[in-house]
Image (cartoon, rainbow, N blue to C red; front, side):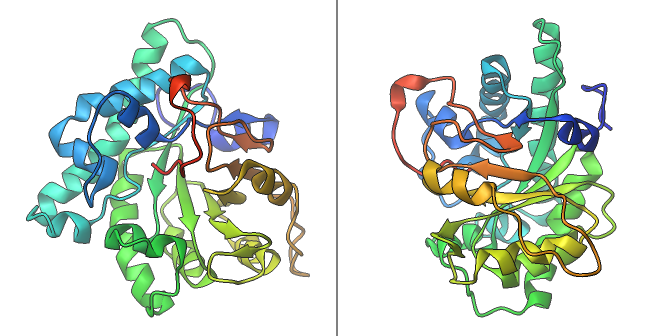
Amino acid sequence: MTSHTSAPFTDALAAGTLVLDGGLSNQLGAAGHDLSDELWSARLLADRPEAITEAHLAYFEAGANVAITSSYQASFEGFAKRGIERDRAAELIALSVELALDAAVEAGRRGIRRRLYVAASVGPYGAMLADGSEYRGRYGLSVAELEAFHRPRMEVLAAVGPDALALETIPDTTEAEALLRAARGLGVPAWLSYSIAGDRTRAGQPLEEAFALAAEADEIVAVGVNCCAPRTSRARSRRRPASPASRSWSTPTAARPGTRRPARGRAVRPSPPNRSRAGGTPARG
């Protein structure tokens, strides 16, 4: 449990609804930051870290309980393509959590007394490729290869002490399986959120089968969808996957629509602080 909150994330989630922040890139863009880069919002970890803290703080002040870090597109491989060595890349990945924790502490100084939490974002492999494949999946890699990609950065994120890991915008079950393996033993609860098309993942697998993968993962405390139309997210987040016979299914659901309107679920994202930039673009980290 991190010092900015008085109750573990899992207890708070079990007690009722938690409000997630809005798309970090939306808020950063509204503040005038150029995110036209393969690293996307993760570029600011090196160039303008204070801007990320300000964006997190704006969402806390707007009513969010949970800040999701700027690590969605942050990976050792992605930073290496920019000539950033591994040790420095690890520092930047860790910094994403530290900045969100700093924002939570500052929110408390400003009089916000509700419980605040930090979820470390883990985006899909395709986000590192920066070619749109994060919305298609099926990269031609095995579960073991994808696990080897995700595990090192997840270890760095977990070591800083976030309240949860947000395994988000996952396009297919192969990558989901890899992430579930990578999350084992980290000591941090996680939620798993797919990007979807209708009642299937972006790669075409039935959602009930996709969600059922998480039923045997003790680390997963919620499942859901994100980067999709709010109507779709509401409908899918209310459905429960078929439970394996060995374990009953009682996991909360998470909905993160791809627009800036609220969605219903056990964990939801509100409209972002700057409401003047309404639109329907995906609200990734």
